[in-house]
Length: 387
Image (cartoon, rainbow, N blue to C red; front, side, top):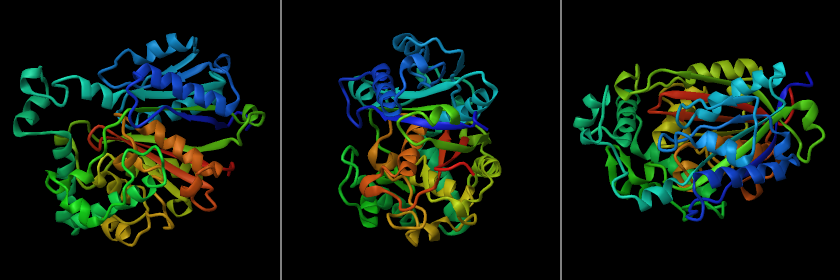
């Protein structure tokens, strides 16, 4: 049991705007801060997990070289925004089996700076060399937002969900962003403000969509035995699982349900708990509909009842299930893939270091990443104590 996995260090790079850093430097800065947080050094790291944006296909090997690592365990699994959540189960196995002692997870991207400086990087086109399934989607105006709008429209048709329900998610996350001095947007938001913002892809308004930012994060997993000797109280990794249902949106079996049903059930089984035990959730909120589907698929309410659950204020500050206590992708930061940041914020809450956004008596946290187009869902359950 002394080899049970624990998280002992976390770090964030400068965000949401950091023109002085490229993607590699975001990783380096976040790593330095995670090491300082834990009391470890680079010499202690013998495992590395890193996923990069398709625009940075060699970022993981460049990071290894830059940091001077010689890992005997390496994972570069790419599933979009849930990459960290998909890498964690393999890291757990490596720790338990002795294939690694101390594993660094890191991600960084100059997403905002790069897109802001380079003309013509905002989307795909047929002339841009599309192949395979995208040849059949793109001519009909398929974008990331329209794909998520399909899910929102279907949920509204099936269950009577209203735009106001989705807007309430953005309002609640913005409330937490107002407590985060680094958040990209912190001004108070109302449901009316969301509904009055420009329509991006019906029924999703501008404020239903995540921000675009720079930023990075890092966290360190080691054995419980090693973690007892470090600077921070170790946070236990109680359950971790991933599942997928498709990649391209036309192959999604059911626009109202994600693979989060399967990933959460396995994570709950490993942890020996249920959704009723969770104190806070850190959901990948690329769009408001993403958070709504993850809420239902992780069992916090029945399918189709997410709108009413949100409307009752459960996800807000002081609610029964505070969500995205750093301001989330919708208001704080979204540098291309945010799964690593979900873990760092969950750890911060479990340590009791949340400041004004601290969830009272926080003992169990769930972090769920979403990759692709509601495609690859990864669920991680963390606890202040081993159960």
